[in-house]
Amino acid sequence: MRIGIIIQARTGSTRLPNKMILPFYNNKGILENILIRLKEASLNIPIILATTVNPIDDHIEEIGLKYGVEIFKGSEGNVLNRFIKAAEKNNISKIIRVCADNPFLDMVALRKQVDAFKYSNKDYWCYSKSDLTPTIKTHFGFWTEGVKLAALKKVAKLTNEELFQEHVTNYIYNNPETFELHFETINKSIENETHIRLTIDTADDFEMGKQVYSDLFNNKIPFEVKHIVNFVNSNSAWIAIMKKEIITNTKTK
Image (tube, rainbow, N blue to C red; front, side, top):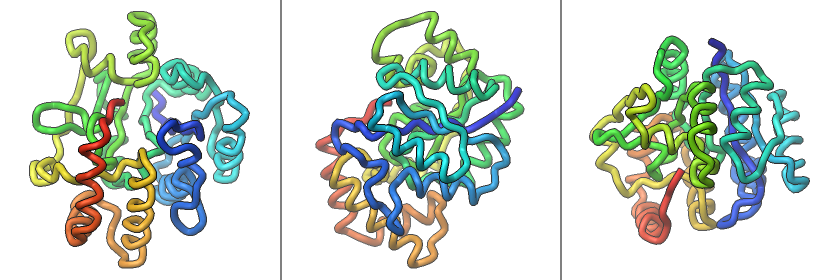
């Protein structure tokens, strides 16, 4: 079964429009920096950028083409359908789903996930908290998730609720009796760092994330969870911003 990365990205965020293309690091946007890091990781699997047919997302397509990744343009609202069609077009049967609002992805964890999911018979493979909450439901922003195309097609047949069309894997991990699931629990010491928020949703997330990202590079800190968390914890101002954002924002995917 062919495995590949599908990145979902659009410019029409309600809380922070154009966050994908606003300068984030080295005069490049979040999406561009993610693509650079994915390319440098040399995972040797296809990378597909799944954006929307909305003309405002033409610039997203241009960025993808610049880095030589496959482009798929589909429904803006029905993200589930966008993933299904992108996978079908590119002959992908196992999907590593990357959300482009997570620039702090741990590529070591991603490589481990790709290697494990490639040979797994599970419908869904994710990093999770000890209570089996998928990390996609948290605000950490370090991890991706794996899902079979067949499982997404099954979701599309079982429900037409907008919630499950927008949040691609939500139906799967909320219906464990219907799907085969694998939960790779994260280190408890990381799980307990509940103040860490490095997913980018708001203007405050963005401005703080820019500083953290730049400082990580400037200080040659490895982009791995434990190193990032230790570095962030050394800055009380960042922690204060994160705690404020966690209180004022809810995260559902």
